[in-house]
Image (cartoon, rainbow, N blue to C red; front, top):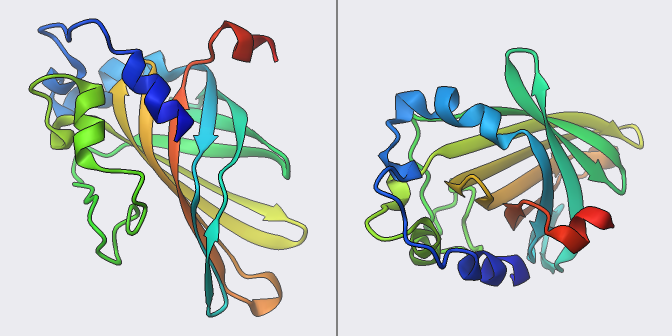
Length: 195
């Protein structure tokens, strides 16, 4: 993924003693929620799709713009999708552990572009992936008369980078369709912000 390489290059500075991994899970939302607000770029890596009984590789999709906005007493993400805007509810999930294995119940199963070593490098020395804040984004929408359910599981590496995986499920005309892909979110650079 092109933005995973970009993200790795952005961490030249050493991690401060008070890194994101030092924030206790019960404090994630209070200390980090408002820092998510603002514009983001969503990098959709290549993934896996299932259409009925057919499984196939999904190509990387173009980057998408997103805005995280104050939403009630929390925050929400407005994804500017080619199918139309999609609003995600955002929550921090301190009580769950996310497994990067290929276990079938893992949102990251068979997404080879994601591994805990790379995410650990992004987070900095001494930061265990289990100590990174876990951000859950969930959305439901109607697209061409079919209900879409989308979920994004992200590790908050720092205030500028979130890394994880997205999944969606649809049942058009009764045919089960689902897909999963790695996702990296980062703050827009000068040129990305102008586009």
